[in-house]
Amino acid sequence: MDIEFPYWNKVIAVPFPVNGRKLYRALCDEGICFNREMLSETEIVHLLEQYYMPKIKNAPREMANALCGWNCGKYATGKTLEFYGNDAKTLFPTLPRLNKYLCEDNVTVSDMQEYIHILNMVKNTELRLLLLVHPMAAMLSSISERAAPVINFIVEGKIRYALAYMTQVFERYKPIIHTTSQTQKEIDKILSRVRDETVVFSADFERHMSAYEQNKMERNVDEVIDVVSGMKILPAPYMRKVTAGGSIFSNYEISDKRVITEYVDDEDFEEAFMNYASWENNDIPGKVFAAFVMYVEENIQEVTKYLQATKSEEPLQIYCVVIKFLVDLFEKYDISMLKELHLENYISIVSHLNKNQENGDITETFREIMRKEIQKIMTAEKGEVTRVDQQMVYYNDEFIWIPSELLKQILKKRNLLPARKKLLTKLRERKVLVTDVGFTKKLMVANQRFETLQIKREFFTRIGEADIVELGKEYDDGF
Image (cartoon, rainbow, N blue to C red; front, side, top):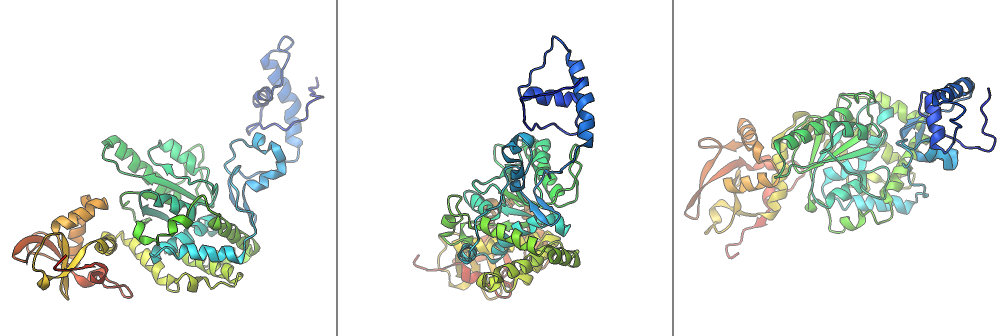
């Protein structure tokens, strides 16, 4: 018995592997009506399977990749699906790459210069480098055969949207920031849909959160890090490794050696940055991402060979490799990228990131926090103060003294107060912290005695950095 649809010419989508039951449901979904008075549903299913399955088995097949990313030297996006015309959404209604496109505008020298201009509004050199290389490293994940580093941006408010604007590869008309308050099953589903791109989650401790909610969030953060860092494959039904670049926006530090921690606030940017890094503006980062993909496609053999030759135990070596490719790309537009971005010392920056990632060094985190926070605090030479009517940091040639209460305020603001004992213990072990009993040192200033943390001044300043005292507000006795 033949089955024919003489007046119907349409492509239908049937979940794989195909059988008679799935064919029947797909046809019904498309509005096909069967005469149930002549045949039962079971008989219809049997006939469909008997008639179509041999034809399907012998028909030519074309594989359509479910995910974006590299395949046979080309970077697959939703554009490839345009071959199927208007039937694409019917054929592949849940295909992860269906709505993922790269910018198709011609990239000009002016666009590349504008990208440099936006990045140069990031005053924090380390952050500038991360925003430059993170999305590119993510896009190379599958051909580099190494996980792009996970970055924990400790940042709040509208800056999160600006960071997403600078790093999000697809759907560049809105920020996509997933929450870790979902179930682990939902987290895994999100991760199952990404490949050779960036994915962002938020994780924030709130005062009203119950212990259960906190534990759930922490478990989900661990899941994201485990999967994106390549330490774990996705569970059933996916059962595969994820190759992507992950970011976690949080209001606390995630203590994990596989994570780069970067504290970010308004003072890391020039005032105009938020206007440029806006989702309502011309999509400059999107154009550069597309130019980078085109560069890799045109040089796929050389890029792949170099990636394989430069595999290293250092997890952040991929950043140096990405910078090499970007230098080549920008040279095609007659732009000296490293010089224009003031990143000639990028190797030492990456080395510093590597060291911090390996050590999980809370003292380095504290050093960076104090260099930022002291810009809002008055500093005074210890012997010059005649009255104490506000919180300030004191110093001489060898030490700085931070009042204990002031330190608690700073650590609380940065959600590090629970780690205070761990921090001070490590500072004392390194003989950076000078103490009387416990962690503190009594200080007498203007006939007032109070507890302080006495820390070696040299600890806060590295070669090439301004002395920490110079960053503070200068003491004025008449203030």
